[in-house]
Length: 304
Image (cartoon, rainbow, N blue to C red; front, side):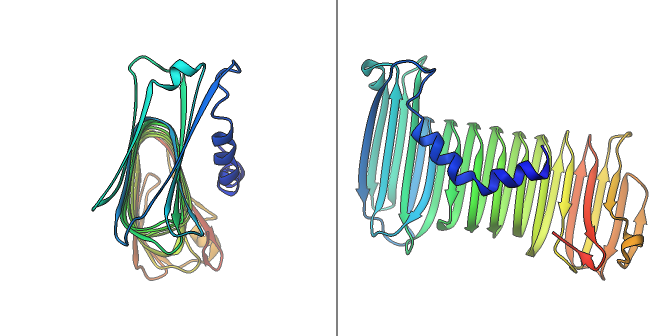
C-alpha cells in the first residue's frame, strides 16, 4: 500500500469507524433485525474497563460528560438470531466488565460496541478482546492499554500509556502514540505517524511503515516477511543497527547519507548496517528476514 493511501486511512479513520457502525445491520443486503442497548456507569479514577467479546467492532472514545456510556448494536437476519448474542455488564469495585457471547455456529450476526469515556477520567487499565472485529481507541487516558484480536484491524490515536497490541490477522494503524508500546502481529501491516517513547514491534508477515516523532527513545522493529520503512525526526542522533537477511534484499537510505551531508560513522555492507548518525543517541534496530529496509532522510538532518 502506498504512503498516500496509509495517510488517508489515518485521516479518515473516524469516518470509516462511524460508517462501519452505522451499517452493521446490513448483513448481505438481506432483511434484518436490529437491537440497541444503551447503559451508563460511574467509574472512579484509576478504575478498569474490560471488554471480552466473541464478535464485534469495539470503539473507545472521549466525550463531554460525567459517566461512562456503553452503546451496543446487534444486527442479524431475523429476530430469533438476535437472541443468540448474549451481552452482559458488571460494574464492581475494580471497574466495568463487558462480555459478549455468540452461540456456536451462528455467523450471521453483527455487533458494534461503542464506549464513551469522559475527557477528565483517567483509567488504571483498558483491556479489549474481540475474536472477530476491529478495535479503535481515541485519546483515552489510561496507565495501561491491552488490545487483543484474532481477526480485525486496530486503530490508535492520541494515546500516551503503556500499550500492548496482539493480533493474529489484522493491520495496526497509529497516530500520535507515545509511552511504552509493545506490538506483536502474526500477519498484518503496521503504519504509524508521530510515534514516540519506547517502541517494540514484531510482525510475522507484513510491512512496517513507521514515522517516528521527536520524543522517540528507542525502537526495535522486526518482520519475518515484509519491508520496513522508517522515517526519523529531523536532526536526531541515532545509534542504528539494521539487517536485511534475505540474499536478494538490501538496506537503502533515501537519499544516501553522503549526498545528504549527514555525519555518520560505522559499517555499511549492503545487508548489514551498524552506524552512528549525528553523533548517536537513540537506539534504532530494524531486521527483516525477507524484505528490504528503507530509511528516509533529509539533507539538514533526519526527517519525518
